[in-house]
Length: 220
Ligand SMILES: [Zn+2]
Image (cartoon, rainbow, N blue to C red; front, side):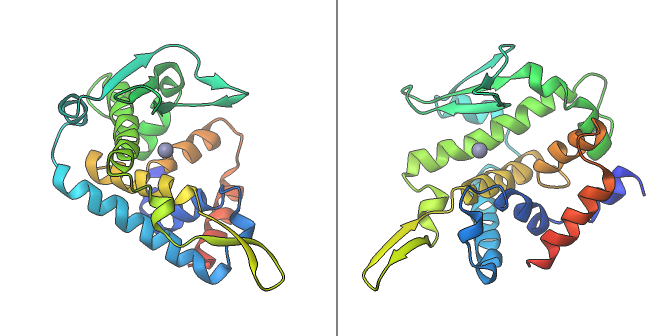
């Protein structure tokens, strides 16, 4: 099976589970609530994309007065490598895309999406990351962050009356992935590119990944 065939079998719900699993409070999410978080976040991202389908993401940023900077700075903070981020401290917020870290994704892009016209992969990868961050901008603008709109989970409880609840932050990431997929017409959620990258760089074996995929599917 080629990567592209394999990608066709990676549906959005499965890849949303991959993202949800990274939530710092994932172990607190009741198993029977996983489909709720996955489906509601995907639906929110897709709905948010409807008015913008067919539009160019860079034009959308410009129209929104949203600045974006494409930089070759490393994007590594506290040992975590960022590919893109949005700075809400700036008015209006500013998107920063770390182009060096995206350059490493070119091969994954070719494997997952296919060959683009010569040399245009980096531009497409930048668009993909801009689209993801644009969703966070829409959340910020509306004051409705996906995680805050969905049901909170119980983090701990003391006796009958004291219950601490928290939102599931990764639902916002799932929605941003779904938004990005719709807007940029990807064949799958964009986090597939990250897994393909890990496999190409032997940080994750194909067997390990298939094992995870089966596991994620079992939650749905
Ligand atoms: Zn994000």
